[in-house]
Amino acid sequence: MTDNKALELLALMSGLDESYINEAQSCDRIKLTRRVRKFPVMLSAVISVVVLSTVTAAAWIQGFISHKKNVEHNYQFVEDSTFVSELEKRQGQPIVAQNTHLRLTVDSVISDKICIECHATLEGLDEQGRLYISKYLSLTQSDFERSKEKNHSFVPFMKAQGADGKDKYFNQTADNQYGRKGDYAEGSFIFSARKEAFGNAEKITVVCYDWESVDRQQNKGLDDLNQGIFDGLSFELSLKPNYDTLILKAGEEKSAQYFYISDVRMYNEKGGWSTSDEIVINYKDGSSEKIDPEKMTDIRRFDIENIKSVKYQGAEYLPERIEQAATEQ
Image (cartoon, rainbow, N blue to C red; front, side, top):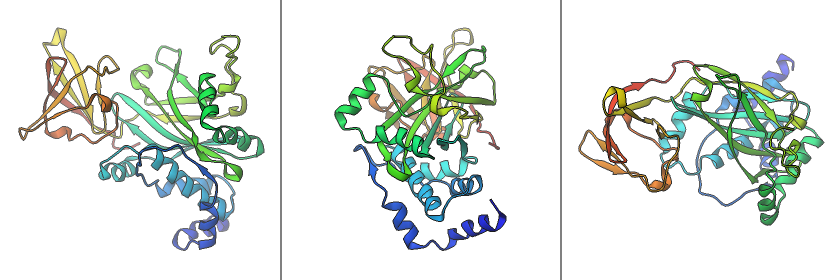
């Protein structure tokens, strides 16, 4: 892209033509009814798209509007309004990877000592890419349920090499009825992993594979997994935390058990939760909070500086130290 063209597009930030905005917002959007989350996407995400590819002004604005809506959708359950504004400040530049058919943009990253969770947008760049995404966005509810049974998804199957040299897979979720179809075909999804799988690595290379390449009829598992339409799609992902984590300990050193509460989420050593688990957080001001079992995995804001102790499965966990977030991403 020429410098003049880039400047012309960036100039739109201070004076958007209403006709462009109307065109961008008029695209057909399919959504599954869910709770409302709020999250404004960083303006730097838009700048990255402008610099990386030659696009029309209407398509550029469309990308800004749709990415914002996609991330808002993925953060529907966050009730603390300060969380979304703080997350925007803590993030680095969006990660963009693409081939001739598809573009994948990592729009947001939530990273603490234990886990990393990313929210991404997948866009179709040509007819093949748009059709690939749109056929899933066009599903009826019954078709959607059947497709899940067959483990089909337009979401790429993502993996990276672990500390032991073996492939480690990301947990992924997608709302196959949420996104845009047609000329601006796109959908949003979430992928996450526990950091222990990658040892002390500060960065990993994530490679995207095509769910449709798996032969489920022959029960081959992932043996025949290949990149398919995602051929060439890979990107580097930083594992540096952008949120602090409070480490709590129960018992003596040799038999100590640990519990973790970051600014945004809590964890136990088992790596999972049971609905029978009981957790009570005691604060320094004398107040306490019992955690709803159904919300143990939710992202929310924790005031870790003011936590006095945590009672979990009959044991009392006391603060040991706070592991700080990285100052640079």
